[in-house]
Amino acid sequence: MTNDSDDYVYDEATGEWRPASEVAAAAAAASQRVVRDSAGNALADGDSVTVIKDLKVKGAGQTLKQGTVIRSIRLTGNDEEIDCRYEGIKGLVLRTEFVRKR
Image (cartoon, rainbow, N blue to C red; front, side, top):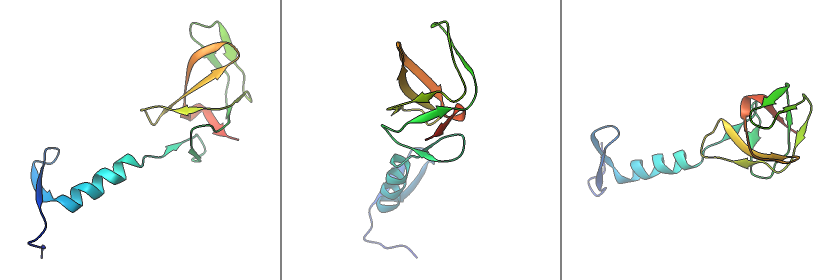
């Protein structure tokens, strides 16, 4: 049974009319995304991570060795990537599957 006083909003994703409160709750849940490392730990801006395998850095001619610590990461719009800096490599983006939170 639905509440008649609730406003309805057209949801373009589903193509249905849905209660406004339900649409707002879904939008709030989507905005609270969680970025996880290779071990399933939640990552946040400013965290330090450790590289779990040797990674060749394209364009820099360097290799990040297993165990390298990366400090002060930044989350990106993609849940599978983090933005970071390491010894002269600006704009370094690492996939979360290759790092573990310290």
